[in-house]
Length: 180
Image (tube, rainbow, N blue to C red):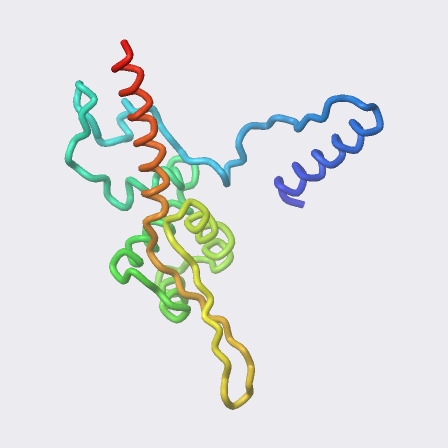
């Protein structure tokens, strides 16, 4: 049983116990699950390239694929996942889209575990919005069997998501400063 299944079981157990005792329902707090979080080191950290000047004006430089992937798979905590995700996103960046055959070739050429790629790295890249995964249904004329090959496409959703958060925060700060 994995950690998430344990959490669900504990929540159900607590829920059932609370119903019996007519007490307030509560979920045990263990923090944010790692699969739903991003790594955000302090903005003044040496781990980040400077992104704003002393007057809080953004600099014009951009972070590389490796630097952006580090927010999703922090190198110091998830080194192998970081390495795989960086290689994959670099390859996807060159192609914009990869089909099942290209993905298989990538996994084989880079000596990556299929389980790690398909069960850990790809779901996380999909969840944060860096990639979109499509399944194309193909029906073979000879055997009339259905095939659903995977297609992975580079996505802007991750950037749009964080941009919306950032722009909202800038508006909140600007509004507060104009009221003073």
